[in-house]
Length: 219
Ligand SMILES: Nc1ncnc2c1ncn2[C@@H]1O[C@H](COP(=O)(O)OP(=O)(O)O)[C@@H](O)[C@H]1O
Ligand SMILES: [Mg+2]
Image 1 (cartoon, rainbow, N blue to C red):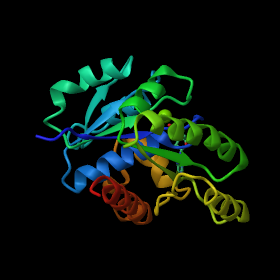
Image 2 (cartoon, helix red, strand yellow):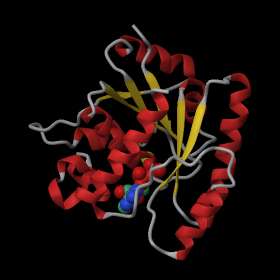
Image 3 (cartoon, rainbow, N blue to C red):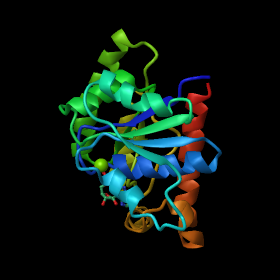
């Protein structure tokens, strides 16, 4: 029996796409045959509500667990499901000062940082990157990567994506574009994989994200 891999979606700001990526990634990993738990660390519980609003005939494909408190308390909450899941996707609160974000950094194997191409997200990303790199002194196995989100075709997007290369953390070879399918899947309580062919481009992006994450955790 091996312990599940813990993947945290983490960022300094709200609105960068933590919950969106957590839900799409959880569903995408489940489609690939992984047994997935979705851990909701955000007191606003948007991930839990998303999963709970799934239609009864098509439940969200990950078990949802609310995680609270210190890293030790979270580990205890996860203990009963530890041998029933392969991956735990952790959706963090929208602040790095929040104690749950610190607990996630103490627990996770992989920290994924969604970054929206724009100056404010870029500045905020410096802070979270420092935190992840600092944490590596005590937890050398901790991995981290930046994941562009809400990417558009503007020059600003291109410039910011270029600047991301100057960060120490690698930029994942995957990104989510700005697409209505992502917002729509939240309303429907599903992932883009349940939206049919109209969401084909979003499905391709999430599949690429899932493949990149699998590449990291199976290394
Ligand atoms: N790639 C995207 N395309 C379109 N809308 C998006 C995308 N990513 C996030 N959103 C929307 O932006 C808002 C904030 O995203 P969310 O995932 O809740 O961020 P966070 O959890 O980091 O606060 C939500 O309304 C969500 O539907
Ligand atoms: Mg959120």
